[in-house]
Amino acid sequence: MLKPEIEDGQASLADPQFRADVLAGLARRPRAIPARWFYDHRGSELFEEITQLPEYYPTRTETALLRSLCGDLPQLTGEGRAVVEFGSGSSVKTPIVLECVKPSAYVPIDISGEFLRESSRTLSAAFPDLLVLPFEADFTRPLTLPRTIAGAPKLGFFPGSTIGNLTPWAATDLLRAMRASLGEGAMLLIGMDRIKAPEVLVPAYDDAAGVTARFNLNLLERINRELDGDVPIDAFRHEARWNDDRARIEMHLTATRDAAFHVDGRPFAIAAGESIHTENSHKYGPRDARILLRGGGWTPLREWTDDDGRFAVILAEA
Ligand code: AVJ
Image (cartoon, rainbow, N blue to C red; front, side, top):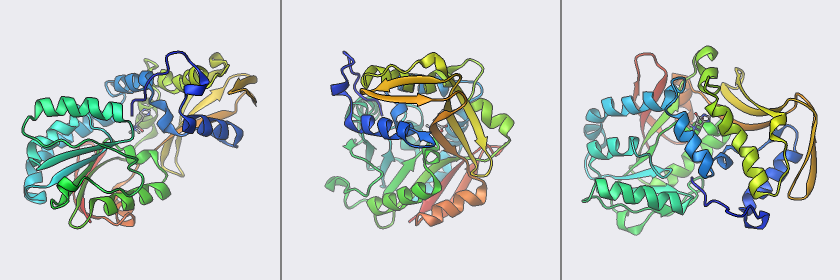
């Protein structure tokens, strides 16, 4: 999801969708900006740092789970599937799955061509015999996969609990779009973070070292840099809240004092205590996860969790 960096800070060079989302998001009440805009170059670096934090259990828990379930996978999926990853692939998780599934082809799908080509090169070097077909597309809509893999049954791979960024309404749509894209006989291997004590959840999104705070506040720096903004960053603080009713962590940028600023020439004001909602991270109990999958047209086949039940990886069939 890495975006090309804007070197000279000219607002005219910014992604028009970024500008539109920020301007609309600041005008709306409650204020909200989609989480996808976190991932400029700096944001991607900070997210990488988050995955290493002692409080941020999801990445290391899911990686260990994938290692332990991999032996069971081939007999469940059969041989010769084409693995289709939604998102451009992680240097750690993807090789684990490719090694045990031994796919006929690997298709990483991402909206950012730059990041996609980079991770595809790395993977091709590690798996010289594997057919790697990077596919630049918005995977939230149904898409037509490369003809080369038309004959092979697909295994979708959607790790990282990325599905949690979406409201259940949008997550259901996405799962249906994936089912349509992957076609007859497809399977899906998906990671979902579980509901757990707020005492564990909140620190995972508000770490002692302040990395997640920097990740959240970087959005304001990006707005200033790319959208000709003068947002006073010191007037905002990072906040992670557990919304129990909606079973999600919410990240906010909360104003610590009244502030007025401009973005792309337009004036905005925020009062002390008000916030800009920047991310949702939905959590799913065992039944919730299965219902979400069924709502999206998938039948859960098998489920793996760590001993503490923190994170789940589920295999489902279309
Ligand atoms: C990449 C969406 C899975 O929600 O846990 C981590 C993003 N935000 N810390 C998550 C994130 C703050 C992450 N996902």
